Length: 290
Image 1 (cartoon, one colour):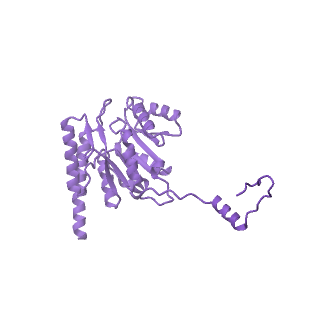
Image 2 (tube, helix red, strand yellow):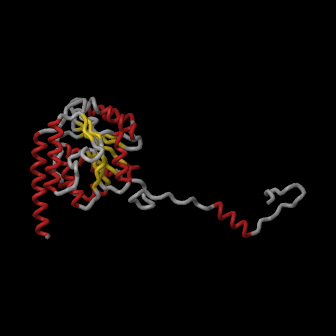
Image 3 (cartoon, rainbow, N blue to C red):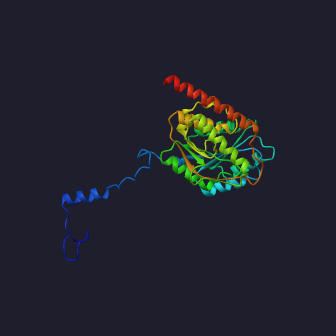
């Protein structure tokens, strides 16, 4: 075939209309569409591309810069919301400085009342939903939840889970540096909740978790009054009852090295009482329906 200009001494050959049409068709041919992520419509964006990591704080001055640095290194694409409950040690001021240095990725919510972990998360959920985040993650400020394992939660969400729980008590999950009494208390609490509520979740009290926004939108958050760690049981119980897909992924939980734990006897008493009420109420309702 001759070049467009033709060879010396020869007149350029004209392409037939059929060949022109073929060339034009080839030029505009689109590449095959990429396969959709599991559980997602072909045209839907991957949920984890719009993720908000929520970090509640109260007197976490030593831990906050460490956890912020680890999150940003592990997942520079996510946004972070620090929810400070009026820490007297200056944690809120430090959070403001981090937000000023990274205004596109780090945000701060200041609350004047220290009225429990649940209230802090509820305020943060409302903030995140109003701003269009697709996935909302709970993470402790003390480093016990490894940001380096955040991808496990987000992968589970991208593959169809509605709530992904970072579990200490499934195959591959571990706990580091806890005294045996603390570990025994945690396992007992989880067994208590699992039996009374009749659910198959091994670590229903876990605080490292990721929600699709649709789960939180389905809940009437104004009716959630759990204050402490019972909050995690409460929302998991609601998600299961509403038919959402709840999965557990293994994580390594490491006891804090700096600061003081916020666990208290009132947290434990609240959880025991509410789980008993939910469990008994659920069985009564099932019998009535049955």
